[in-house]
Image 1 (cartoon, one colour):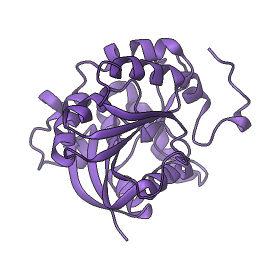
Image 2 (image 1 turned 60 degrees about the vertical axis):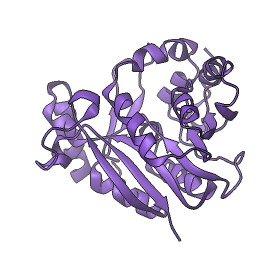
Image 3 (image 1 turned 90 degrees about the horizontal axis):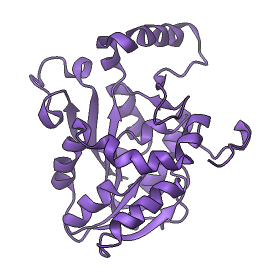
Length: 264
């Protein structure tokens, strides 16, 4: 694994744990097996079908090993994959080689700065499987959404997945973290609530995931210049279905799929 630079030299939006994650070849090699069978993955396929059309150009930010790129190709879309992990992009390239029309390009770039993509050039931006939650701090997440808005054509759509912070209240292993995090947000103005340090993940320690509340995510999208069109609560039913979605969904959902339109 490439040696991590000092924290002050890390790319914008990249935490020390995320740097290790991006530069660990074993993570990319095992990634597809890890996500196989995930309820989130099962839910985002139909969501893509609902909001993407054949012939559209779609930018997949945080494309990883190309899982979503192959889905978009099956829909007849022209996709561009962007990731900061060379190992992930290498896996995606191998996966897409037998399908030359699956992706127009695979680009190594920081999601905070998509200078390699022209303004107003894509019909949709896809940011799935909690990719936005891996970006730190809050200001960097705003920049990711602003970059997504910049590259979208007028009326273009952002398709986004995020994990819920409140859901951790119901889990024994993370309930204590939820109470401590909430308390700190009340007594410390400099505390950014929602940053959960994950257990060792594929051998990578210290990887942080930002968990959102629904009001926070709505404000973030509005701040970046998006209007929400579709909001899907994710639950523990087959394919991520939430049973009784009318019953306090904001407290029960473990995540959200959101479609938002560029406006203004």
